[in-house]
Length: 109
Image (cartoon, rainbow, N blue to C red; front, side, top):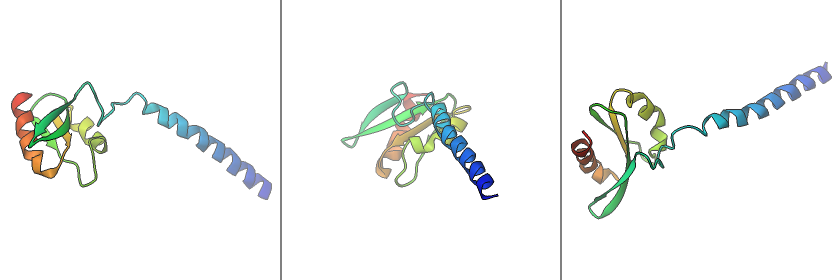
């Protein structure tokens, strides 16, 4: 009985180890949120260089990541809202978020 359980455990472990690289490969073709040269750009605000990305078309929608977050962290929200809105996300300090949102809405609509 113990040998049978060991064989099942071994087979499941092998399947799990094979599944990890396969799952990782599906992300190789995904959008490089946070480092996308096709949609990324910089603004100089108050002397600070601020990076942002814009996706989709429609009414502007500004996403604000939480403390310690970044553009890549917002991937699910970007993909969902970009179907209907022009989504902007930036790796910025809080003090410049309003200025960037105004600039993007004015220059990209």
